[in-house]
Length: 259
Ligand code: NAD
Ligand code: 2YH
Image 1 (cartoon, rainbow, N blue to C red):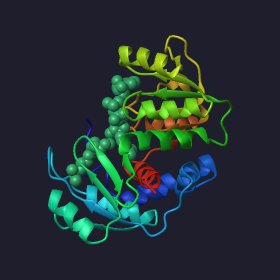
Image 2: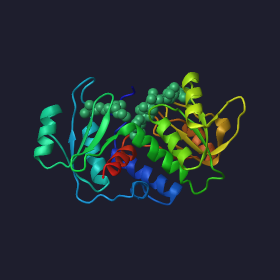
Image 3: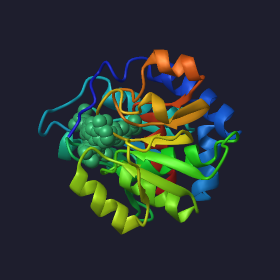
């Protein structure tokens, strides 16, 4: 399980603003607009309590602070509890939180205490990055390459299938790839038969996972994966629209999904 680092989260506000401009160029809507359209909901006055969690590898510097910045960026009233863990949860509820955000090393959840809805970061992140990719205004076809079919990539790929896209899947784990191809009814992408795509969705914990031979001029690569799926050099060479941000887009998706 890849953990975020404080360095990933530096200048989260700037990272979010940059991602928002890219999402606007790619889809014609900002992140809020995509979430509102996708989930059919708008935040009203939900107060969000962010609870730091010390278990496992412990508190990640900048994590709760970044969630505070992110929730406010998307128009939610939020606060970080002074206490962590169970005491923090108690504090959040006592201070009027209606949505709780908290993460340990394995699970990052949003729980709406009013309506009982609960969301997990990985599928919410997969779906929103896939949704952004699917809305690419300059796409030349409904063919999408998905690289990485794990906890984030699988739900993203499933979402694209449900939206009627022709999904080509690739994962370095051959057994998982074959099972996913069969479960989702997608096409196995074989690097031996290279072709180019104008829409690519990537969700792996590795760098440089999108090879040059699949990148078409001005394609979109929508990728929650950390580190980045392509080099700066390839991004510039092909004028790639890169949608990539370490925490905010996925968190927005979680929050909208529990409204
Ligand atoms: P996971 O381990 O469940 O899945 C990753 C998949 O990528 C695996 O199936 C693995 O076999 C595959 N893979 C690894 N190297 C590959 C390569 N070179 N080519 C093709 N496939 C490869 O992980 P996950 O939970 O799905 O997370 C994926 C990434 O997304 C991680 O980097 C995680 O930190 C990141 N993430 C980001 C956000 C965000 O908001 N930006 C949110 C959640 C997760
Ligand atoms: O980064 C993580 C894990 N990768 C789970 C998220 C799933 N994408 N967890 C964050 C841990 C935060 C820590 N416990 C804190 O500061 O509260």
